[in-house]
Length: 72
Image (cartoon, rainbow, N blue to C red):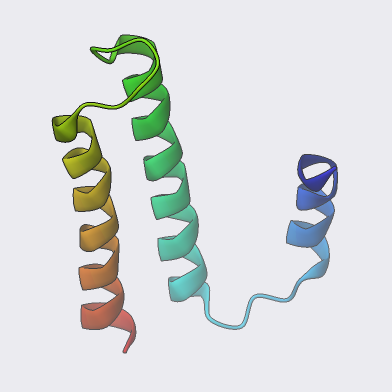
């Protein structure tokens, strides 16, 4: 149900801070792509390896650094 209403939310919500919106949308897409790559070509079948977890955390820390440097 969330995916069904997501496009409607994008259309009806006014974007006041375009830079923040763009950064958030970019990192959500980047994290989803990294997750998909790990699921598809990851080492173990039903779990994450330590390197994969570090990779996902690294993406999140880059996101935090970008937010702190350019937004705040």
